[in-house]
Length: 278
Image 1 (cartoon, rainbow, N blue to C red):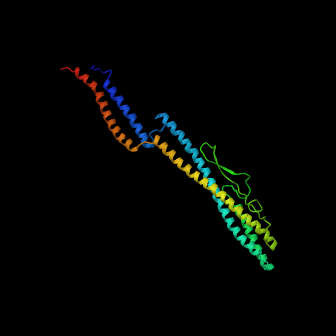
Image 2: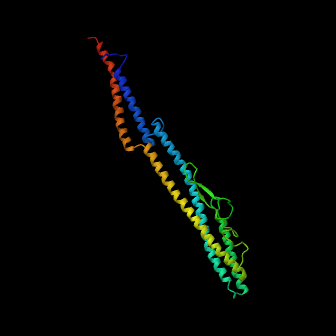
Image 3: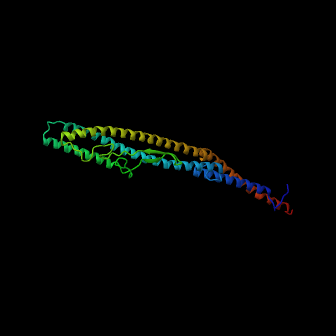
């Protein structure tokens, strides 16, 4: 082996090895600090690109879930109002049935009619108050059904149907001017309220079925997001136990590499001993 002060091959090799160790150590430290084995395209371009695509899908599904959460809230508010309306109709039917009794004196019939009108007004108030985030599917303010996102590509939707329960409509047939002040009017009101109760029950059944579909799909979307998130983790997450072991090994290699470089750098000092005078 040639001894030279111009070229120190041992020192060059030791420096290369130390630089390699330093690079590996930096990679491990990045993995430990971020928790990611693949943090940028330089680490693994193909896997990073796949992970980014899945992250985009997860972000889109989060928007879908927000849309479905809103749909669920609107449906719940509407069904709560509808159930209260149904309960009020039961009370109204009792008033109407009582008003069919011909033995009532005028004062009693007037008091009975006042109760009926009060309940009728309560129905309209319930309809008007069934609003969530500006959406009310019961008061006739919306002319069409509401569609909500169902997938990440935004080309599939779930629908919540409008159910107009305003007084004098197709569902609640009693007009706002309905009274039971006479037996004749009570007879007409009874037919209306019986039809109304059937209509409201049918509308609530439809809303319940749609709400169940929305809730089930919302649960599925949440599970799908969890699975995709787990899949991304399998692709890019670091095994911190392994990285910890690597870190300790590389730290030892770093110290040994520095010592080896120091020894290699001192080798040319041997040349001086060749030129010592006796």
